[in-house]
Image 1 (cartoon, rainbow, N blue to C red):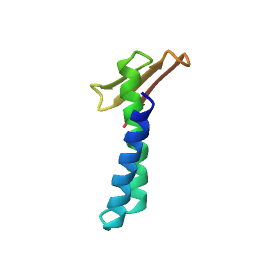
Image 2: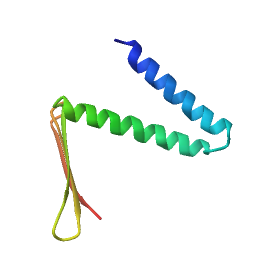
Image 3: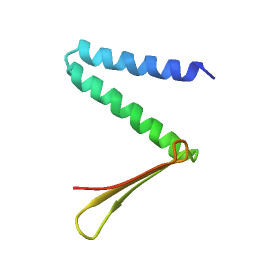
Image 4: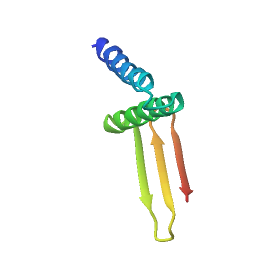
Length: 82
C-alpha cells in the first residue's frame, strides 16, 4: 500500500498550494502547518502501534509535564514546561 502516503502527501501539498494561490495563507503558514501535521500524525501513529508512549500531564503546581518514551531508541524524556 505504498500509494497511500504518496496520495496523501500529494493531496495535502495541493491544498497548501491552493491556499497560497488564492492569498489565504503565507508560505510560512503552509510550511509550519505541514511540519506540525507530519509530526503529530507520526506521533499518534507510533503511539497507537506501541512504538512510543506520549503522555501530557497537568500538575497541581500549574506546570505541564510531557513524558515521551520510545521503544525504538530506548529514550525517556520527561520535562516540565510552563
